[in-house]
Length: 127
Image (cartoon, rainbow, N blue to C red; front, side, top):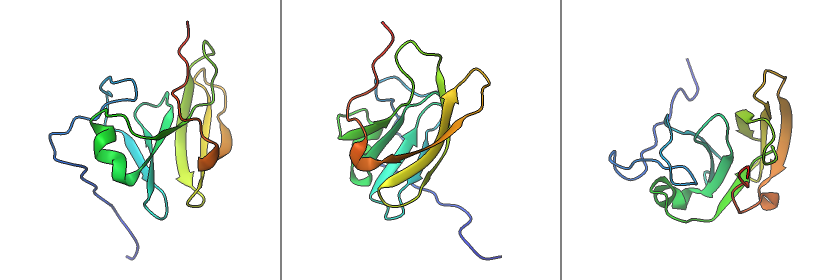
């Protein structure tokens, strides 16, 4: 059998505890999807998102909840039903395709986003 079967990436030491963009600890290990050139990673710390895109060189600082340049992929609006995110793939070194939509059981919508167009501030919380 040919082809890539698995990749293990260790960022820092095994003692680094991943943190979400808001500083809280995620419930599960994050989903990390690397760009084809491995210069960026899209990270999903919860199925409710948002995806966060950081430079690979900043992953250790990101995992320690330190401030690093971050792009956010968030489709819902504050106070909307909670969105779910899944199936992100890089279609180029600067474009991602993923599915998202209300977590109410409605079908998810496939979306494309350009890295250069991502907001650099976290999505607003519901007041």
